Amino acid sequence: MEERKQLWAPWRYAYVSRVGKKEEGCVFCEAPRKSDEEALILYRGKRAYVILNKYPYNNGHLMVVPYRHVASLEDLDEEEMADIMRLVNASLKALREVYSPDGFNVGVNIGKAAGAGVEGHVHVHVVPRWFGDTNYMAVLAGVTIIPQLLSDSYKLLRPLLAKHMGDSR
Ligand SMILES: [Zn+2]
Image (cartoon, rainbow, N blue to C red; front, side, top):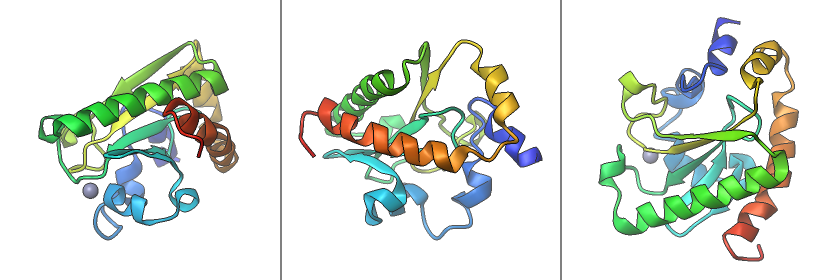
């Protein structure tokens, strides 16, 4: 229960306690080696990919991740930066279409002190927000509806990511 509560606290990334250190290697390096469906990858760009967060703060919480294992934004090259920004923007458009949020948090946690769950592999969080969602989510925190939400999110968002990145996949 304690751990559950933590999942819903903004920018406290509980991923690490569930899978981060226990899995072999790095979850963000391993995800692209799995099938899209298994890893919940919504879109594979040239230099980065979009993946649903399995332990979301909010419905539709996704992440944009470079394929290369680098720890911080300043380690990214020009092409990675451009691709990540394109993917963030396509994600915002897709999330708007599906969920009509009132706003977004787009953010990067760099280093353990900042709350990074998967240290060593930088990633951009995109979290849809609604007025009053903090209270709403606190209420939902004890309810096991997340798997359903995840597969719904996946089915809805996947074609829209492709659309907004300009291909017909
Ligand atoms: Zn990695």
